Image (cartoon, rainbow, N blue to C red; front, side, top):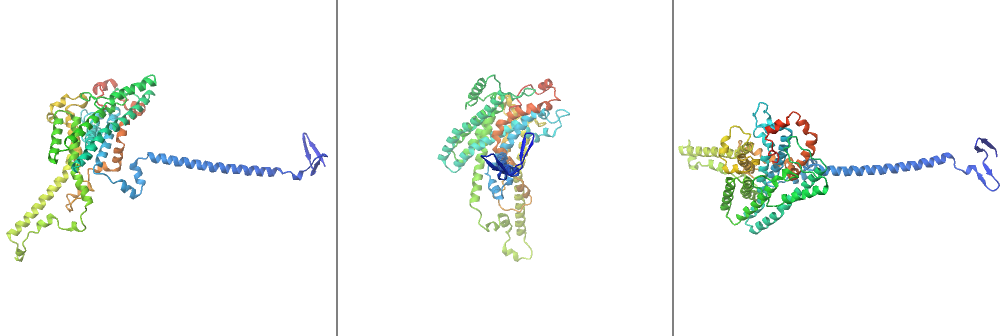
Length: 540
């Protein structure tokens, strides 16, 4: 064996090492390249395993993200990704679905109202009050979408309609036992359905204010929640305010009660009171005949208007509208269950029959007699008159709809001082917050708005066949479709939650990040005087 030394390294060039007791063949030892191959194989296996794990992890994260995104996606968007069958089943709407959409749009109007008075104060002025007051959204009818008080009045009409409709339907079917069950269940659940979400919303506001997230607006129009040094003091104050707020018989005459942790909920005590009055009204009329029932509702509504109880007027007015709609909806439902036999719709209708008035014996004459001509002309005149009446009747909902929006635009309507003289003087006794006689005019507009929509014939309602060209445009344009589309229905489904939380969003995010730029061109002291220096505009 040959041995070479190079510093501290010893190289054995022969194939055998023998020290007398042990012998090692160098050829039996693995070469360095073999160890490298094993390391490379283990490393490749580890990399492949890591990549597979990472791929599965990413796939699961994407799946979770897609699920979360799908759950947050509004239904009016997700319906476009569904099959036609699913969309068709989802679009089966009840006869009163338009009221849900109306409530949703009204909720957006409340939000825009509070947005406008803090970020665009000029829009609060009447169109033409000054040379710079020439904005499009200041115009009558257009400005209704920015009027929170008009929206609140619409809320109350819809509420009165909705909570009485089921009981009135049972009265229409002579189900007196069912009426009692319905009213008992509704009365018991009403407070829980309203107070529990409100308690959650105010508790969230309490947490936000404890962490200093509310920001006061420059003119201090809005009441923000109080803030305490300790959490125990903060939650104690919140609980004391909730005990007052959640009392069903809270005094609501005079100045409205605005909860300190969410001032926009001043409508809730009025909602509770109006609900109880509605249940009592329906119960009182349970034994009346249909004529005396509607007479009682109308007289009771007029009396509430006369004494200036504007909120109760709206609730009971909703009962009147529901009582008018129940028989029509029942008839439409029966017509769908008992469809017209095939071929029966091809039979001559009344108008065609009226033209067939010529005596067969007289047809033998070579010229028509004077009697025959008179009969034919009379039939034609009657046909023209009926067509005109149909057109006028079809135009009524549209005329009432425009009139309702015009009335809801008060007090921003020019040259209408005479309308205030028609309002009972009892409205002067209500609190300044409600704008006194202006509220007496505005609530009429809310009633007309709901009434005009109820008169608008739905496309699904069976109608008699007619080829009248004048009627065709009115049948193709349905007012209810403004509030039965998917977007309006989505707003209706989230309206209560949206109403509860729009204030915290505005005064935790909007005032903190966007309000300074909006008020940069305004003099705070001057505007405080110009706009009255109070918060009456804010809690509508």
